[in-house]
Amino acid sequence: MKNEQKQVRIRLQISYRYGMMIRGEFMKKLIKQYLLFLIGLFIASMGVAFSTKAGLGTSPVASVPYSVSLVSDVFSFGGWLNLLSVIQIAVQVILLRSRCKPLEIIIQTVLAFVYGYLTNLSCFIIRDIQVSSYREQLLYMLLGCVILAFGIWLQLMGRVAMLPGEAMNRAISEVTGKRYENIKIAFDIFYIAVSAVICLVFLGRLEGVREGSIVAAVAVGSIIKLYGFLYRKIRKKCGV
Image 1 (cartoon, rainbow, N blue to C red):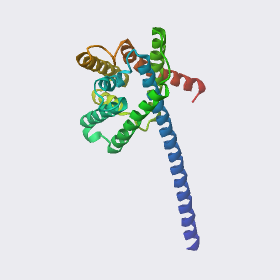
Image 2: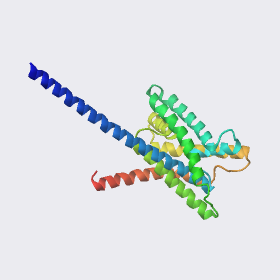
Image 3: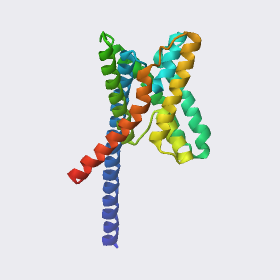
């Protein structure tokens, strides 16, 4: 009887230690994923900042809040970006309904406000960069597209959360069965059209959107595809 009790205690101890080990590994993996996501978030905000600095129109997803910030000073650029995020979250809730995960929505809401502040911070960091020629404008615009796409790709690789805009694209993709990248390109074009209307109606000229916005609308989604292709190719070559 004593031997049986001893064996039961040993099994319980082994089971407990194994459970703690598994839990520890899970927490390490989760921390790494969120760290990767937050790095991607900051990089994406830098992409938006460089696109704005170029003066050829900001990135599509930021073009609407940027245009509104030129018309109204109720909120800053980042503040209007936060408001757009709230609308994008609401669209997800309406589309997914019972499939909508409350915890994910809460995380998205928090991250959306973090992203808004990071965007303001990124614009502040590069505030002293001077753009003196159209060639430099093109350079910073393309640099912004590459950086923004890399930031979004890192967020997707994190697999823990997404910004409201990207999560809304994913929700529409799930509901319609269309590819995520194609949904993104379509909405980027939509954002540009809305921004153009706002600028023309209230300012009488295009400010938030120009040729750079159009390039970004097509390029960012395509560059994300390229990053994914190169990553898979490298993993395959390394035998991972």
